View 1 (cartoon, rainbow, N blue to C red):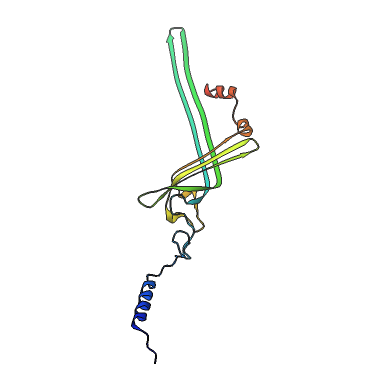
View 2: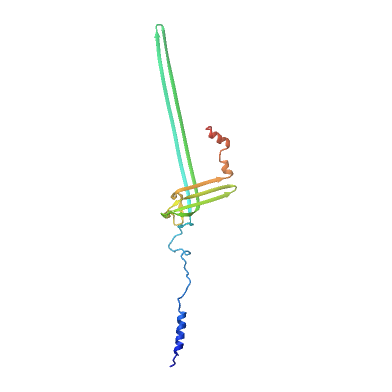
Length: 195
């Protein structure tokens, strides 16, 4: 049987003790870059994007009818001897007027908006803008409002009817828009109540 000298055993034990430090490995999972398998893709933080389905329709009708009739009659006779005179006076007046105002508006659009603020109660403030230029016509659609996270559907959309404090602006400039506006003469007549 061979025996190993004691000093060799001590050297070997020292080498093994020095090499047995804590093991180090790189982490393969980083929490911010992997989506959870059980979650959806709904917006939930500042900078996230949600799709707003704008469908606004409004109809207003206002009608007025006024009718007024007035009639006053005065009659009298005088008779003295051979003179017999009579007279009557009648006044009549009438007014009939009616007016009706009917207005119907409809706006349909789909656009993306970004969460710009998370309120203390957990609601989101969203804002979005879309500029479209086609053949000399420019269109601008802006949306801003407050939404609840539970109103966002699983496909990350929200209807405009679910926006609180909604501000939806639709504006256009160009040849078609200018053609649809009344001219300066018509505007002056309208201002004076003549047109």
